[in-house]
Structures are given as structure tokens and as C-alpha cells.
Length: 131
Image (cartoon, rainbow, N blue to C red):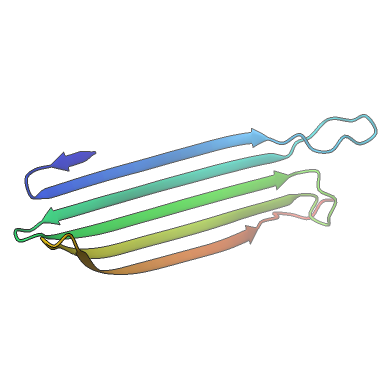
């Protein structure tokens, strides 16, 4: 999405990715059966807003967010649960403010700040022990 006029500009972009894959696994004693699965979800959004003031000043605000989820399942894993079920999560947020002055002497001056938050976590899930 893009919006522009004489003193404002807004750009918004998004990205979605979802996948479900079977993994090949190891070949053991000529058995090529594998029930390993990998699921991936990724959502990314970003927005840029710029305001152009009179007298060579401009202000830009940038906002980004990302969410990623990966799920790995091996139902034939040899442990006491009889499977391996891992889930990984990542959340990231980013914000930036920029004030720019463009002088007539072909020199630019800017002041900016950034704020970033990133969180990663894992969940190992096993429902019941194998009998």
C-alpha cells in the first residue's frame, strides 16, 4: 500500500509464509520411511511514514513487526515419550524516529532513535509416554 501527497508519504508492506514439509530422514537398513514433519509460519509487517515540513525539515517514522513459528515433529524418536515435538517462537518489534534537516549548503543533519524488542521461546511437547 502506498499513499503520497505533497507533504506526506505512507508505505505499508506485508509478507506471509506458511509451509508444511515432510523431511527425508535417515536411511537405516534400506528402510526409507520417515514421518518427520516441519511446519513454518512467518508473518512480517512494516510501515514507513514520512512528513515533509517547509524549510527543509522532514520526519520519518518506521515500524516493523515479525512473528515466526517453527514446529518440528518426529513421531519415531527413540525416547521415553516415543516422539520428539519441538515448537520455536520468535517475536520481534522495531520502531524508529528520524528528524532530518537538509541545509542549502549541501549538508544534512539528522537525529534519530531506535527501539527494538525481540523474544524467542521454545516449547517441548510430549503428550503421553509410549507404552
